[in-house]
Image 1 (tube, rainbow, N blue to C red):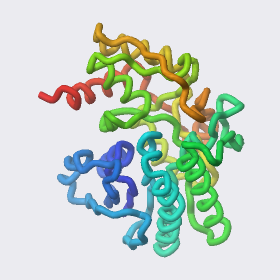
Image 2: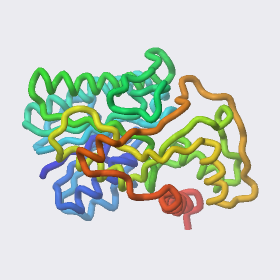
Image 3: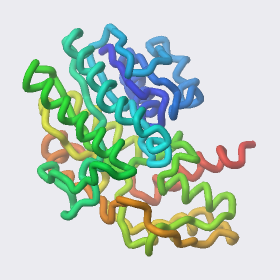
Image 4: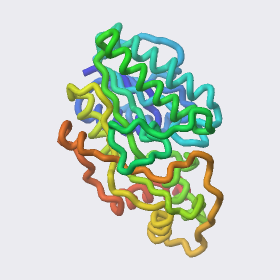
Amino acid sequence: MNLLVAGGAGFLGSNLCEQLLNMGHKVVAVDNLITGSKKNIDYLLQFKNFTFVNHDIIEFRTFDVDGIFNLACPASPPLYQKDPVGTVKTNVIGSTNLLELARKTNSRILQASTSEIYGDPKISPQTEEYWGNVNPIGLRSCYDEGKRTAETLFMDFHRQYGTDIRIARIFNTYGPRMRLNDGRVLPAFIGQAIRGEDLTVFGDGSQTRSFCYVDDLVEGIYRLLLSDYALPVNIGNPDEVSILDFAHEILALVNNPAAFIDYQPLPQDDPKVRQPNIALAKKLLDWEPKMNRKDGLKATYEYFKEVVNPI
């Protein structure tokens, strides 16, 4: 298949491109490099079936493709809040452009949505039927509501034009090629611990997250693309952990005696719980995560050691 990966130079996008190429697909990675990096895809240039295009999906451009993965949007709060209007435009105008491309080429298109569409949920774990609890005018709303609007666009294109869509609601994902200054909890904790800095825990650390290793996540969204299901599907790891317990896991892993824990006020609209119900993914895709957090963190730590202290 000829596959387009929007956001292909990012953390998740570059890992997806690698797996698609290993499967024998022809891949075009599109990225404006605002948060993605060419370093993430330099190693992919050895594949004759790989092409990189520096392009912003806010501007329409045509490609000859059979399938589209829309992963184009900053995913960490500091990065998407840096340009909130641009974040909304990427989710709305960019998604519309890719949907129009899918219509023009009669391609299947997958939207990389997010667990953030559930906001600060009042139920846990979160199922696909839950509509969420989102602040529409908060600091995080450019991303949260942007992704929710993108889901609306996908469903309306499907209903109005018959566009062949898939929607993956992606929960916290981690692994090699994450940005160290990403702003999300895992790279922040590992970076701080390696440098001997205190790990910043917001609030009392009782809020929870569920972390899915990137290889598992890529397998899940690929299986979803190949499925015949158009409604949203949670893709993530239901193994829930509190942020405070997670901080202690990182301290034990890195084992830097200079690092402790620093408690800071909880940011606005920070979700208190985050845990996917993946019953639908298990039934529909015969998929569930395989990598346990201990082994996944070890692999990620080895990657970050080279970033912080390159040989």
